[in-house]
Length: 117
Ligand code: 5GP
Ligand code: ZN
Image (cartoon, rainbow, N blue to C red; front, top):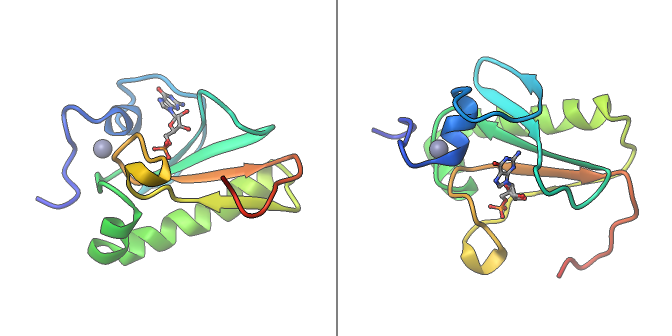
């Protein structure tokens, strides 16, 4: 069923507390934790607790949950006192997606170039 936990999914395991992570916030529907390989002083991942493979699937199957993710990106950015930051949803291998459980990267705390690579 859509949103059901997947046994082989790293971020389902983090959401369930079965794999440790530096969790910065948790809500009924979302978890935010620090990226293990940070690309900036702040690099936080915001994920839905429910499993959706990518942002596109999430947006279609559970738009209210997608809104929860977006709201949480703002809160974690405020908590890290970021005035400027970037929210990234890598979608598909060609765009650099490596974990197929939807997640927003919140990246900030340094200058960011545009366009991204
Ligand atoms: P993607 O490349 O799919 O957009 O992003 C996946 C992100 O997950 C990467 O930035 C990677 O560093 C991060 N990541 C991978 N494994 C772990 C882990 O076990 N713990 C944490 N906290 N982050 C992870
Ligand atoms: Zn998952």
